[in-house]
Image (tube, rainbow over all chains, first blue to last red):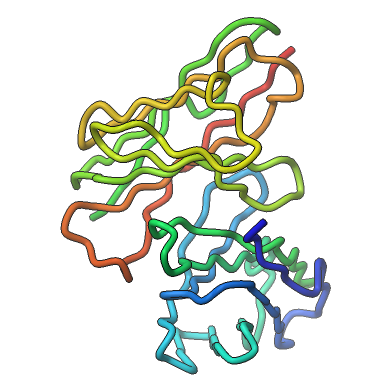
Length: 112
Length: 118
């Protein structure tokens, strides 16, 4: 399976704290993307980081990518209750017809 | 721009019947569409990749005779779950990549279809 892994599987924090999620993958990639999914709903695209980039910011989100370790992290700063959701990384692997392979996901709960 | 819709959003059917799910790109032409399945509290698993005008490519372990995929036009792909059984109950999500979009462009996801087989 080309599915990546994320840790932690579940994370519970107080509002205002930072949340960090990690993603590891198995193959060389073109890019890596992070998505958010509220319970039972579709996916919301958060951020894309290309294989030649090491860090990217978007609002309260910070993503890093280490291709040598085949890993990425998503940091959400100053979390809010509305950030409660599942977060998935997805890798767009080289030489695979550009399919996405999703990580196992991190379930984030932000306690007001 | 780049909106993808799915229909129906929710469907309940009896065991043994077939169910068709539509995925449409509303404001762009999708040369490639992808179908995913998501079981409760699990991640999305890629089922198949469909290119307009050609046969779908299925991931290992996905039965192509059970999950029929048709990508007959540049804006529509359909997934038919044939002879559905309760274990096929899941959340089915499609995504699309548009004509002319670079390989580094993201896929655009539909809102998903929840299938419940009784």
